[in-house]
Image (cartoon, rainbow, N blue to C red):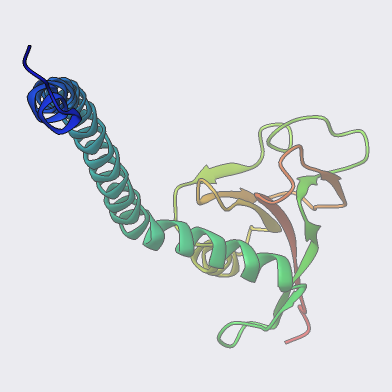
Length: 185
């Protein structure tokens, strides 16, 4: 009978047990690493594309803002000037004042006037900014005032007395100004 020591038994069985576990760990780790790498790679690319999309969107918004800033600023400046000016200084040597009926007002010949153009007496001109509209009215001796719509740069020259003003539906776009001249000179 041969005697086997515990040491011989342990050495004989140990390598197979250790090898068996090592093999399982390696095969398990390889599978997990491969799927994790694919998943992480996909997430990384998705995040990169999302961030790139945000950068491109931001750049386009900035460019659009730069392009539209000039015209928008011009319209808003004309609007602010028209709303802050109640009495306008006489232009040149004519002794006339333009009295604002208030921001957001439409010119009317009377309280009963529901027409859009003083019953056909007002003429619409595409003159440009409000200053040009006022100068046009000042130079026209038959002009009694004007209604200006800032967003369209629309100048409505009136030829009958403006005795009333009505609030506009779009209050930040309109202003009615009556022309008052001193005829003593």
